[in-house]
Image: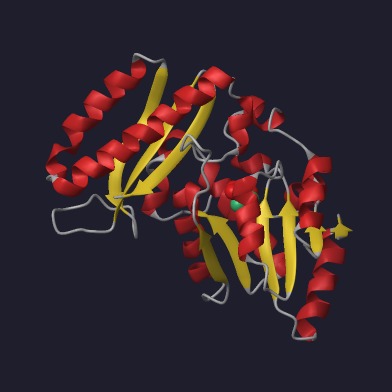
Length: 280
Ligand code: PAF
């Protein structure tokens, strides 16, 4: 595992690889690797040269405390990367990634970035867009891997690739990995107590029941069902931030004819915020 901290050095290495016709794959992360990340590493196993980036991006946190408390487990991460035979770890510092760069912070993102998480986490997607664009420019990958758990992020990255990279980067979408209880894997699960972890899984159970119901019934019923679910979960101290059904290709409001629909949820258990989505 080749560990690189300098942007310049990473650019040089990637240029050399590209000149030698070696195809580069990028798996961007913020560290604290779990089985969800490992599924991305596994998905890339047959690729030529695999780079994992590890950078906790301050631009995408709307809450300073959340940023400061973001779990850091570098020793464990290194073990996982070696286990999966990753070629290179790019771990830049904040100064190079943030201060020395012009950011597209004011850049107008597509409308779908203003709903769901975009509505509740101001400037979050601006931060994601800006840092992933920077990573793509440094590394110039042919493929990049993202999980479907962050579904809105995935759509935004596809938009970025179309807008700024002429669709020359293949975005590989990986399925959400879940704990036995159904709870989607997330670095933030670490902050839940055992009891809270069980509560969080209740939300997944509700998504599954909702999916079953909506498959067999009219989606007009959704607003009523949503109110029932929110009420039911609030009795368990689970606070739903949003619960929506939207077309999965563009996050438009679905009509009767639409078939590609996902259920999206964000919720709080204590002060831990979690998100999830499933296909109907
Ligand atoms: O999904 C993440 O971990 C982050 O949003 C990403 C894509 C690494 C950008 O900082």
